[in-house]
Image 1 (cartoon, rainbow, N blue to C red):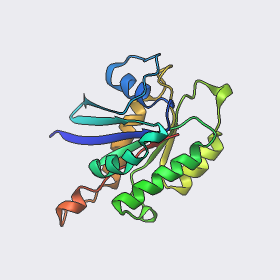
Image 2 (cartoon, helix red, strand yellow):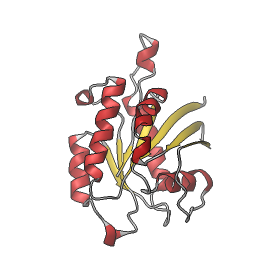
Image 3 (cartoon, rainbow, N blue to C red):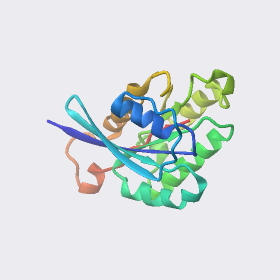
Image 4 (cartoon, helix red, strand yellow):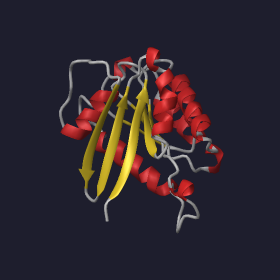
Length: 189
């Protein structure tokens, strides 16, 4: 039986959202930065189909975030960051997701994955591993590092998103359609 999972990539501009997504989909690394407004991709992984929405990270498109969150309320969100204000911005996007879809993160029902992007650029690290691990514990979510350029943990990022959706999905038969379609979210730092 085929299952479909929808993942939305959110984050600041030039943090590697498209590079990570394209590396996962095609296996290729895009060297040239080409700002995205919105691109969609799909990939079959075993019996699962993973749909990915790659979004704009530039501040001028922040008003679109609410719409992307609403449109993909059955999807997983990924947030990419590698800048000093990464954790603050990640928290802001997480809060926006929580407000937009009206979910209580304290109940542990929010599928969330934090990913430290561009881990190959250790000399440019803005968020320490300890800070990211602490935030992942606070948010009750999974955390790992990745690099599209060096092909580090690319598959793991997206497969962990799928795993988190599966873990957080209500068990047994759903009492209503809304409960069965609860969203999942992954945030990449």
